[in-house]
Amino acid sequence: MGTKEKSLSQAGLISEEIENFGKKAAMDDDTYLSSEDTSLCKNGDDVDGEEEEPSSAIAEDEPSISKIYFGTKGPPQMLMVIILMAMGYGCVVGVVPNLVKDRFARLNHGWEGDDCGDFSSDDEPDECDKGGDDAQDAAAWASLINNFLSFLFCPMFGAISDCRGRRLFILVGLTISIMPQIALVCLLEIDDLNPYFYYTTIGFAGCISWFAIMVAGVSDVIQPKYRTAAYGITSVGWGVGFSLAPCIAVPLNDSAAVYCSLTLLCCGFMYALIYIPETLSDEIADTNRRTRAETNLEYADESAFKRGLYQPFRHMKILNRNRLFRTMAIVNVLSSMAYSAEYTLVIYYVDDELDFSDGDIAIFFAVSGLVGIITCAFLLKPLNDIFGERLLLVYAFMIGAFHDVLYAFAKTAWIFFLGGGLFGLANVSWPAIASIKANNVNEREYGIINGALVSVSSLSAGIGPWSFRAIYYSTDNTEFPGSMFLFGSCLFAAAGVISYSLPESQTNARLIEEVATNEEDITVESEAKTSNVGDSTSKDLTQPLLTTI
Image (cartoon, rainbow, N blue to C red):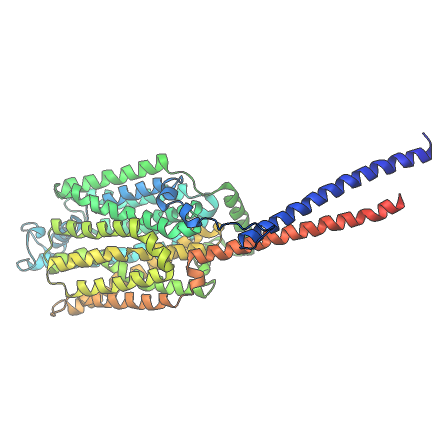
C-alpha cells in the first residue's frame, strides 16, 4: 500500500473516531441540559408547557428514630448492656448508705449496738450520726478521685479509641466498673474491712469511661439529625435499669441484694463480650492512626514521661477550638456540678433529713427513672424537632432549677418524689450537649470529643459534691438544711441563660445538615459544569487535526 493510501486510511480512521467522540459529547450535553431542566421543573418552572405537581413532603417518608436506632448494628446491643449495668448499680442504692454508715460507726466511733440503719434520725445515736458524716465525706472523696482520673484519662482513651476501635475499651471499662461491687461483697463478708477500700475502688473506676466510648460508638453509625434522639434512647437505659432494680432489690435482704448486683454486672460484661460489635470503620481507624503518628513526630524530642504527662491536656485542646466549644464547656461545667452533687449526696440527704427507708429510696429512683424513660424515649425527638438543641438545653436547665427548689424546701416525701419526677424531665440536657459537640466535629473525632466532654464533666463533678457538702455543713442545724439545693438551682439557671446565647446555626442539627447538603449540591453542580466545559474544549481541540488531515 502506498504512502498516499496509508495517509487516507489513517485519516478515515481518525475522522471516524472524532465523529464518535462528537456524538458522545453531544449526548453528555443533552444529559446535562436534561438534568438542568428537571431541576427547573422542581423549582416550579414550566418546561415544554407541562407543569409538574409538587412532590410529597420528604418528612412523611422519613423513618422513625426507633427504626433507625434498633435497625442499626451496635446501638441496641449497647443499650442492653447499659440496662444490665444500671440494674446492677440500682440494686445496692438503698443498701450502701446504711451499710457503710454502720461500719464507720463501729470502726471509727466505737459503736457496738444495733445496726445504725434501724434508727430514725430523731433517735439515732451520736456514733451512727458521725458514721453517716464519715460515709458522706468518703463518698465525696471517692467522687473527687474518680472524676479527677476521668479528667486526665477520658480524652486520651477517647482519642485512642478513634484509632484502635471502640469495642476493646468498652470491655476494659466494664471490667474496671465491676471492681466496686466486688469490694462491696468483701465489705459485707469481712466484718473488720474498712469502707475506704470500697470507696478506693470507686475512685479507681474513673480511669476509663465505658459509657463515653459507647456514645462515640453511637456517633459512628447514626446520622447527625438523629443523634440527639439516639443519645436520648441510649441514656434511657439508665432509667430503665434504675426503675427495674427496686423490683428486684426491695424483696431481698442486704446480702442478697449485693450478690444480685454483682451478678447483673457480670451479665452485662458477658453480654458486651459476646454481642457488641465494632462500630469504627477500618478506613477511619487507619486514617486516624496515620494522623496520630504524624502528630507524635512533632513531640519526638520530648521524653516519654513528659509526653505522657502532657498528652491528656493536648487532647483537651479540642474544647478551645472555637467560641461554641468554649461556651459549651462552661455550660457543661455548671450543669455537671449540680447533677453530680445530687447523684452523690441525695440518698444520704433523704436518709438523714427525711427518714427515707430502703423502699422510699427505691420509689424515688423508680419515679425519676420512669419519667426519664418516657421523656427520652417518646418526647425527646418531637421536642428536638420543634425547638432544636439550643432551646432544648434551656428547657432542661430551667426544669432542673425548679426541681432543685423543690428539693430545698421539701419537708415531706411526696414533694421530694415530685422533684424526682421533674429531674427525669431534665435528663434531656445530656443528649442535646453530646449531639451539639458531635455535629460540629468530623467523623474522625467522635471519640476524642466525647472523651473531652466527659473529662470536663468529671472535673466539675468532682468539685460539685464538695461545694454542696460545704453548704450543707453550714446550714445543717438551721431551718433550711436543704440550702445546698438552692445553690444547685442557681447553677442550673446560669447554665440555661448561657445556653440561650448559643448560635442557632451551630446547635440545630437540621440547619447544620441543610447547610452541608446545599454545599454538597453546589459542589456537584460545579463539577458537572466543569466537566461540560472540558468536553466542549476537547471538541474544539479536534479542529486543527481535521484541518491538518
